[in-house]
Amino acid sequence: MSINTDKNENSEIEISLKKLGLGEKEALVYLALLGLGEVGSSKIIKKTGLHGQFVYTALGSLEQKGLAWHMVKRGRKKFSAKNPKMLVQLVDRQKRMAEEVAQKLNELILIPTRNEFEIFQGKESYVAHEFDLLGQAPDECELLIIGGMGDKFSENIGDEIRAYEKLRLEKNITVRYLGSADQKEYLEKNKKRNLFDYRVLPGLFTGMVNTNIWPEAIGFNVFGEPVTNFTISNQVIAGSYKQFFETLWKLGIE
Image (cartoon, rainbow, N blue to C red; front, top):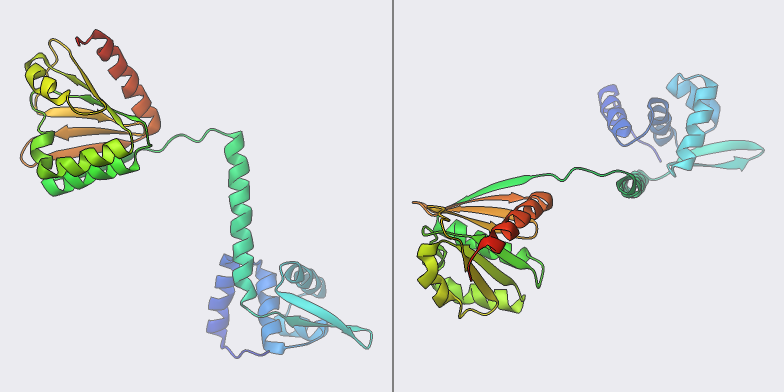
């Protein structure tokens, strides 16, 4: 195997090899092997300009990584580079090793939950996001809603309500709605919905905003023009809001 490159190309390749995990001397020896073919250590030393001990150490390391091999001819070792495609396998092994280490570290430490904050503005974006939240939610979970007179979910979702309810019932997701006293008549009509329950909390007024609490996300819906949703994806925060909801639920009137 042989390769012809100028100094600039060699320099760029050497940098790339280092990024793939090879040491500086390993990269130099590997490049020399690619250019020299099957060769003894003396020619590698001459080609790289490295001290013999460095070359022997690098050759041993390259063999361990599957990038070089040797055979004995007339009592002397002859070294060759393996196909550069072996670099891909080297990276794959490093990736698997990193995943195994990460898994073990996760068992030892508690990594803080990351917040993901997203904004969805406009009717189409809002409705699509509501379907995404419903679709991603675990089966047989609960959607907890703190509503108010400004709640215009039904108005915004329009004819899509049938598809939304069909999916919700298929996933066996229960809705518990905590509304204001002025919503009593509206909520009584909604009580016909399957897997739906509500309570009224005197004095509750959320204006044009309501809060949706999913198992792993919180959604704040602002029913203005245009309708806007702010979603925070964080299981810990969602759990905290759920506790707040349960406190208000106990104060509500059936």
